[in-house]
Length: 330
Image (cartoon, rainbow, N blue to C red):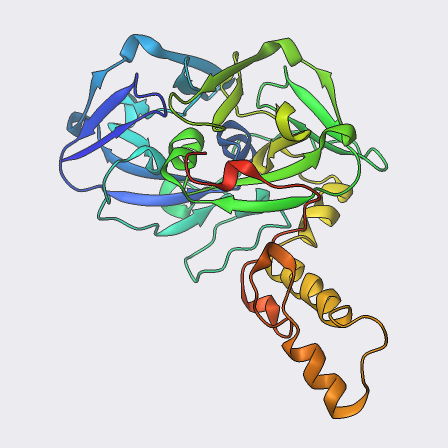
């Protein structure tokens, strides 16, 4: 038996037996609704699924004429979708509490994939629905109109929207259990912007905030109409946390800022700069100079490793102030 819950624990469920299949979906609706770069769903026979608590705490948003997306009205976590005509329950794998004993078998709607997020495995990729699901490209969504110098984001229903200028200070994936349940996904991908570069376009009052009891910094802001994670200003650090799944895909500025800010590219770029500036004040030339630059410690994140070849370890953009929510208890 498998168990799962939303972030706050109000909605809980159980699934008997093994899952029939597991897929990663990259469609724009899933990215917006989960606030993540893709959603991972495990499919189970409908008779094997049951709610154990909180069925009355579930809200629903009609995302298209073909489907409804459900979420916990208290914390915004996506909850399972029940499809009686097909006899299937689709479980967001990020909400499962144990190892599901299943692994993704394919990627679907790769035609809608965020261009700056690369798929690194060898699983089959389908532009839309796979052939066994009847094929097709699903619901067409309008592409955003470009706005020079601006990165935009919004929830799935569009009630909450914002804009930022300039690059994020850092972009990072978080695999903690809180983020997995909050985004109902394999991991959260967040961008952190200076508060001065952020502004609300509409819907600031449409946000709900769930602060996890006992956590110093962790909270989730979401749209009360559709449940999508939205930008969360962090007053104490003068920054704004932006769920990357909510950013506009097709906006060239978004693709540029985040596409060039992927972990590998950012790591190589940051450490090359660190290597060049490791020994200022005219370092020695020749072999001695090469040795001094290669062994100078990388100042990024105080990791203490030699600057040369730093693209191999995790890359994070330098921040002008501490990041307290990365400590234990965040």
